[in-house]
Amino acid sequence: MDASRTPDAPPSPAPVPGGPGQPAERPSPSRARRLAVPAFYLAGVTAAFAYVGTVDPNEPGHYPVCPLFRLTGILCPGCGGLRSAHAFAQGDLVTALGANALAVAGYFVFAGFMALWLVRAFRGGPTPRIVLRPRYWWALGALALVFVIVRNLSFGSALAP
Image 1 (spheres, rainbow, N blue to C red):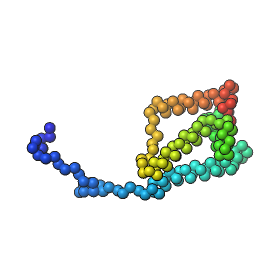
Image 2 (image 1 turned 30 degrees about the vertical axis):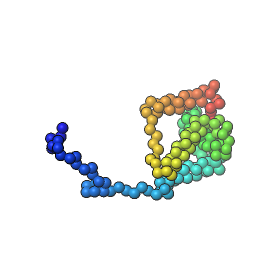
Image 3 (image 1 turned 90 degrees about the vertical axis):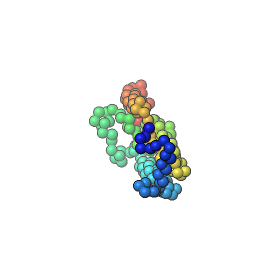
Image 4 (image 1 turned 120 degrees about the vertical axis):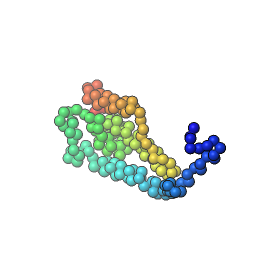
């Protein structure tokens, strides 16, 4: 029990926001302001996809070669990602999956995240966060490792770009 209060004393009033010693409540930002950040990210990704969709990575000289592949001959999880993005931007999902299936899955995850972020920004809700337990991060890392191993073996050549 609090020794400073007597049992018969009324409870102290709750602090008033904006009162003495309290920060003032900020007005909620306008809808356009809330949509600015996700729209900026979406515009950047759209511009990148437009560039990759226009400049074919299958023609040599436009993009650098993967350093891991150049030095070791091993396909990393990102190898074929530009060819996949090019095919995806052209609307050829089958070719995109053949170039890098993991990247195509990432495109859809990103699209879902952006849709959620835009809807929440439009409605004034909180910014979505990607919060996964460590075991799920480890599972994603293990999935990427299995993808790399399988695509570099002869029986997994269908996953190679």
